[in-house]
Image (spheres, one colour):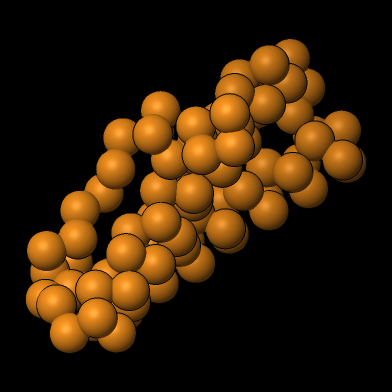
Length: 83
């Protein structure tokens, strides 16, 4: 996956997240509020993973390494940076 594909993925995930947040704010989540909140949390993790992959690729490129050597890290690793 190249940088543009990652950026496109980030954009799509953000659109989904914003649409779900708007639905919650406008009371359109209805009985599915718990599932909507769960999906938002899942999207946040996927976004963190995508941003992490993009940062890895950029860092490798700046260091003169092959950006294709970067890989998506597991959610637990990406989400555990601040723990």
